[in-house]
Length: 273
Image 1 (cartoon, rainbow, N blue to C red):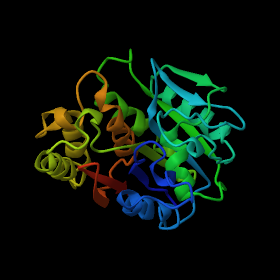
Image 2: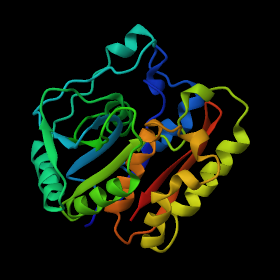
Image 3: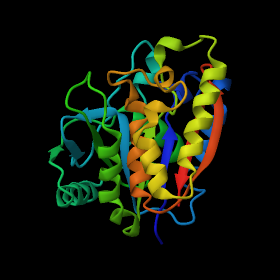
């Protein structure tokens, strides 16, 4: 069975694990519940997962080929116990190398990396979705020329299209980010703007025509309040994983599978196929 592709929110830092007793803070419980059913809600359990996280970008698409990655605690100022989290899922270097091969076939330059651990865009949502850490995971970076450049949405859609054959091979492709992400506006009175951006984005993602959808995503910055949601100069890193998921969807239509308000932001998740 062909696996779907997903675009999921990964929350803020170790948000689901902030309480020392292991309970989730109230604001994040709806997102936690969505993620907890992420794999169990699929028609067929995937053989492996390929994750594209907002928190890993390289000058060229790069796959992680390490055998047993550790965790990269790339968040700051959180309770001490959140730096002792464990998630010991097996890596999937074969899937990573297959992804690199498919990208090269499509004309992309690619790299490999074996030392860096999984960032919190991977292990935080996956600790909720896969608490038993029992599905192999591979990671693919985003591609950006430098840390302060805007990302190319069309290039990431094309990369997703190249990766689509993995779906027939039992691999679940996940883009991990946040559909609204502007840390400078936490707590600001922007509820209407976030809602208008979310509805506009959802309108594009759920178009029946995949070509129109991908064209609309390529020009996402023209949507209402787009640069409030994702500031220029690399601020769209949390949205760009959606482009990979949409490209890998091929003709499958997107549906919104989650919507909630966190940090004063409207945040959504999508599934294709």
